[in-house]
Image 1: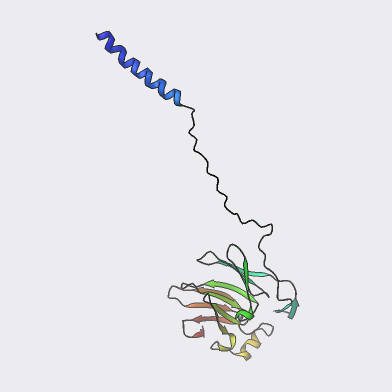
Image 2: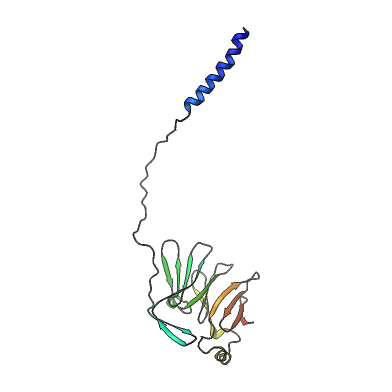
Length: 198
């Protein structure tokens, strides 16, 4: 009787091992469903199309005209849109599918855009060669150089006669919400009501 009890656990162990090793290598297959989803496929990549012709810009040697357009700034907003500032073609927004061009005809201050900033409220700011534009998703609000406090044409002519009065080259928003503009002729701050020089 003891002999029989000793063999049962060994046989049981061998049967279990045999079972697991015999199932090894078998692969379960699921039936594959075929779904005829329409796929969007185009042979062309989305393009930024030049529409403005020639544009005039200023340098240390005076005004110039050019037909080529350079990109001056690229920003991704919180919705994933890519904004591209150009020197002569305004601004392009790429939503992942197509480019949309914003120019002076849409309300942008000028088609020569130097820099882009998205503020905490989701507005997109554009620093241009003639001040700044703010886009709220529906329309533009412009802050031309003529409304900037402290604008002094005599002082600017002494600084650099070839540059327009307030080219906005860089912008940032501080933790209090104020927007700061670095321009050709000084630093400006917008507190939500006033634009003033510092």
